[in-house]
Amino acid sequence: MRILILAALFIFALQVNAQTIKTVEKISWYGQAAVRIDNDGQKIFIDPYHLPGKDEADVILITHSHGDHLSIEDIRKIYNKNTTFYCPADCEAILRENDLGPVTIVQPGDILLINGTKVLTVPMYNVEKTNYHPKENNWCGYIVDVGGVKVYHAGDTERIPEMKEIDCDIAMLPLGQTYTMNSVEEAEHAALDTGAEIAIPIHYGMYEGTKDDAQKFKELLEGKIQVILLEQIK
Image (tube, rainbow, N blue to C red):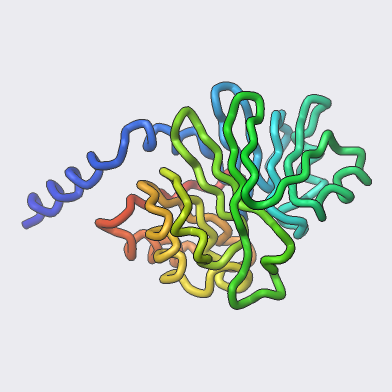
């Protein structure tokens, strides 16, 4: 029986595109929703927060204006004169007040070409806990094309109807259940909605959500979507 189970898992693993698996190696997670994507020599940071040290960002994408997603302290660790910012409208003033730019304002539905990298902006909001992330704020998740592999960063969101229209290969979804998803099961269904080959949980382990939640997320999706638990960079 054990041999049959191992064989089944091996067959399932083969169904995930090798390039998609390779792309996971280009993603670094710093806790909360902070990630770095290395794309052909270009460093793309999304919601940099609790960064352990200095780095050089080519592009910074901000999902929304909350302090654990728009952290000036952390941005200064990676900012240089060539860094460009893409963010929703209410983030612009905060960046400019701190002499950070240039800034391009985005809203859901935008199609961007950033230094040769295609980036799509998608809706990010709460359905039930609307006081935290209202839809009318036009805050954004991002889909970054990394060498043909579409990497979706959902930002702080619940499961929203638009996820069924997401075209991605890798989905990074929040597991915190205070401000984002209402349960681990909801995050599971959101992952299935996107049709991703690989799901990566984020936004857990710091202020909300636990490692046990991440493990549960992986177990719920076993045999459906390959879940990869990234080690947090500290």
